[in-house]
Length: 159
Image 1 (cartoon, rainbow, N blue to C red):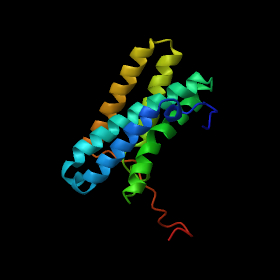
Image 2 (cartoon, rainbow, N blue to C red; image 1 turned 120 degrees about the horizontal axis):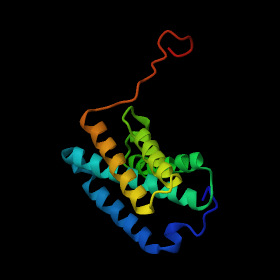
Image 3 (tube, one colour; image 1 turned 60 degrees about the vertical axis):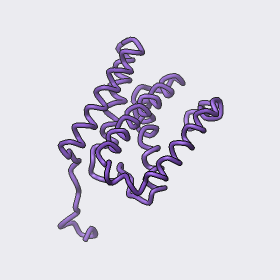
């Protein structure tokens, strides 16, 4: 919508909406059991994060925006689904925690857009960005990589 890309994907392809509603219903039914499958949940979420980041980049490139803007739009597309999911489940969105989440999306998008800019075949760019992005997210989960925090300690007004 922000790029003026019409029709919207789910409007042009109602099957996308049916898939999304089905996934939401399954998630709602399984929500109370997710804590038992946390790692699997985070890995599947990571796959969705990188896939939607790439889709967002590809759409942005298709409308002719600057490559840097395409990476940002890819990140917005990638993280927004997780933000909605977490809000509906009354959780703090992963992107607002110290985990590597938006960073993974940015790196994935940068790889995809960079390979596209260098003239790589679309399938190669897609699979490379998907693989590297997913491995990055999986490693961040496994080793609990976090972004540095800012406490504001000792700064007047941040107490």
